[in-house]
Length: 478
Image (cartoon, rainbow, N blue to C red; front, side):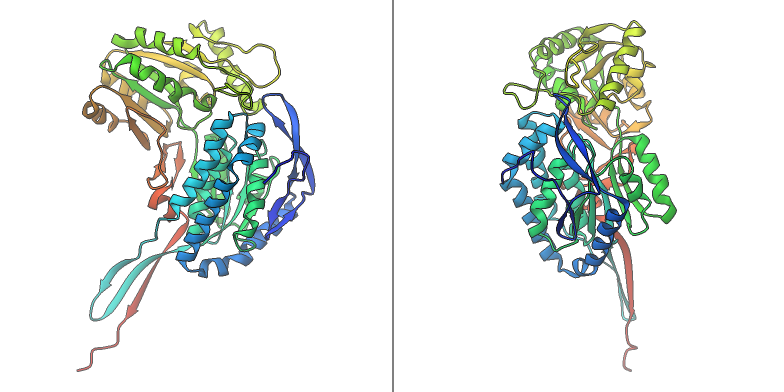
């Protein structure tokens, strides 16, 4: 596959390439220059995509489960085979390094491949002389999948794998900031799936609300901010659509005094700053015991100074820019607030005037617990280090949040760390690591970090309705 930014990017509707009613520019966040135009889906074209998915649904739902497994696995093969050109396109529109973009694409393939190994359970509730009762799980219909800009391919595959495997058809919408790679994936998959089973549409801010309120869509799966998630849930409620929401986080790390500072400093850095902090499960607050606070902050800053920030397409770059201007402005506003309040900066601060949405790696030294940088999700390369005296205090501070997506505990004693981790109010808790997810293990947010689950059997069941069938047996012959 050869990708030219001058080539047409088309939507996929009913297995065919479709130009948008109009188009919009897609920018490279490292240069702020347009790299291509993406189709802007009209309301009528969305209706066509939904109608196509609804038309394809009966045949896809009736396709044997084993055949659906083979086709989802084949989708993975397409991503693997085209990873090289796709990652270059992804870097250009998203900003992450080529290595990270490759991991995004290959990770999506891995997720599809592993999801295809799951099976839907069938439970026998009763099998007596008088009746047989079974519970099974049936597809919902048309799924509207709304993917974010931080991991466009991987997080789309979080949705595509289970939705399709369960027998649903899909209308997929990538973020308007990163539509190009997803559109190309849709194009590549036209020859793999039956027409209408997977439709890919792109558009501006109006397209998402059109989908969440569309009467022909039976479920919305959304990944994005908590603020937008509330709007998605409200819109979907008009027709009682099923929803899965993977939303924001303000993940806390608790670092105990028995850690080997030199061993964990680099891991803790990447826990917070990977993908320039644009990860929903990145460490957003780091609580460090007073006994190791000084050496750890020194080790973190020393390592951070060795990390190269720049254009993701350039060799040697380790962290790219913030992906888009609105998020860049939000991160800058948090740094400005910290500066205005007189908080202590260990490194970084406000960005220089330059092209691209680059924010320097910024580490703050023990800002107040009620500060914006502690209480809000930054989603950028800014980390507050926070000192604590005892574990009960750290747990209470970590739990004092409207979010509950992920958390981590770091200690030389894994059992002690586990006992602390079990007290944390988060859907996923890691001990001596972070951000490890599996397509075979559920991933869910507590509190305002989401509704429902992704991945694993629980994630697959999110794309089904429960159906119990009871058969009365003929009366026994005397």
